[in-house]
Length: 565
Image 1 (cartoon, one colour):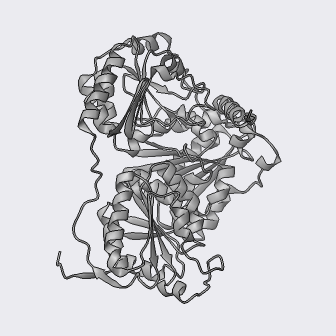
Image 2 (cartoon, one colour):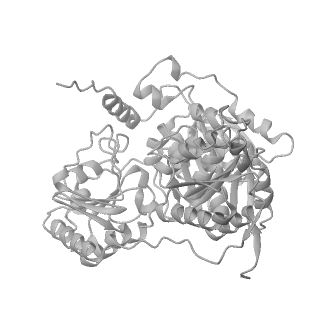
Image 3 (cartoon, rainbow, N blue to C red):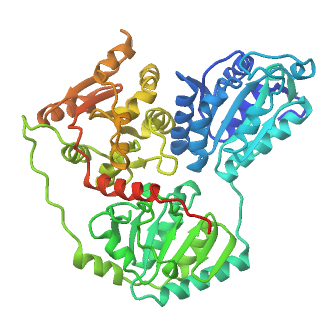
């Protein structure tokens, strides 16, 4: 690149977004970011996706990052940025690299003691950056043109290396000004383990696993976030151990794999999976996070004296902790030295339960959640990805057997209801023609973010959305019921015509029986645009796993305060 070439601040940012692999960014305009958007639009390799509001745009960036490895969102100052905050907090919790770029006040406004619109009515404009600092790996305000290239590069580098969101604020009077053009560079993760620490951790782990009669492997969600899925599969193949996945890690292990035994989720695990995992002499959880949600209110029977916990940057053994270890390197080295042992797999084969085959549809039979998910499982292909909303969709999709290559995404750590609508938009764009999204969302969650269905129609996307209408917040009912869990019913299928507005290609149907569902699924698969199938379900029809999980999470929430004594 010509060393003397100059570009605008906005063009510089656009070039860097393209270099980290983005083809789209999600935006809502506002007067503080309009010049910035003008400059971003000049980059022909990036397409602006206009969303209905900043929260939904943030959820879309979340879904895009899951499909493509990183994402970007552009907002205006304060009213826009703070609207996006919840989604960015979710991306932080879920280890997703999202660059949130906000327009900001003119650099002269503070010096001139100006009270500005969209602010809190005081001459202090650093609060948005301060707030975002709690849910980002780095947050900067570009105050001087000469610092802009360095600050932009350093912040994006942190986004990619930490697998966390970052915040860049661009004052409205700097976005169109000239700075040196970006030099060619890469933003790939380059972290390495401390060699001696890695070697010792591997040796100690091999010793513990070799001394166990029935060791087990369990996959956690951070394997995917930190690029360690392939290394984990090498360990699986080398070990001959029974292997399970935590719920957020579903899809990492091919479910056709001969060593795979199902989802481990404490008392709501796949049939016979908890018995094998919890009875193991030693279990290695790789990329796992132990929370009240993933452990059913901390009721899962995981014994610390048998636990090897390998995460991004650390390995914890029952009697030692090793820091500075890259997760993928640890698993790769372990796979070279582990001794095969199929005892836990043999034990599983002895007790496993073969699930009964589902019966053919009964035309007039009311549709149930069990029948809905059984039927949809049969249409899944490697060219699809399941996006499951917080709630009973978690538990029902866990029981679906995914074909090899089929994607799977949930937001279990943050669990923000309404997430899946925006995430389906972002994932569809991020994966392109490679994956068709099949999304499951409850009516209560859908009411939070329904507008983004219109964005999917606007950009010609083809997700199939199963909207489960049972008249309320089912997951909250099972944790703690009350009148606040009831909602106003909508004609959800009818909304698609509203969003089409005579020019879109969305299609919808409302189904009440198994026969209705069969017809609707056939039409959705053949349709060339968005499909929304509203499924009418009885209010009390939910999975037994949700009932069990909800009672245990509720019990954990209801613990009495500890009295100082």
